[in-house]
Image: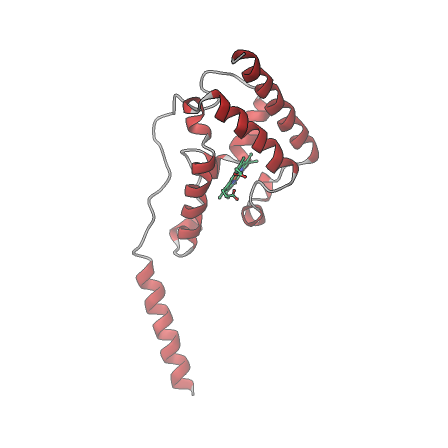
Length: 156
Ligand code: HEC
């Protein structure tokens, strides 16, 4: 009986060691993106900080990785969140979206923030500082609405 447990443990340790060789590529752009949402347009520093703190890890070209990103399979899960998050919305490539798309994304941002869907709850367990307070949400919604009106006026 004890032997079986030991063999099981050994297999686990070997497998765990083996998967460490599979490292996902890091999401890190060295140069500042010229298409970033705040590159040409200034915004309330509160908004900039809020988005960078709570959203940029999954919705930009630069993820601030935690130490445990060096450990598979956690690293795979993080890579997946970043990949899926960036496909839906990438603040680093914001200026490349057509105005209609930007408008749609802003509407979605308001929606997910209102419903508490973002930042992802699994992320908030560890990054508690990324949680948005009620007043953060109000400021963010106000900013997004403002931006939507700006787009509506410029595409008239
Ligand atoms: C831990 C990673 C992570 C963080 C942090 C995060 N998101 Fe996301 N986000 C995702 C993933 C993954 C998806 C795509 C899957 C989905 O829609 O659930 C997504 C999708 C979205 C979408 C598209 C929703 C849809 O219905 O298609 C919006 C808008 C969004 N996020 C906004 C935000 C905002 C705003 C923040 C910060 C307040 C944020 N996200 C923080 C991972 C994240």
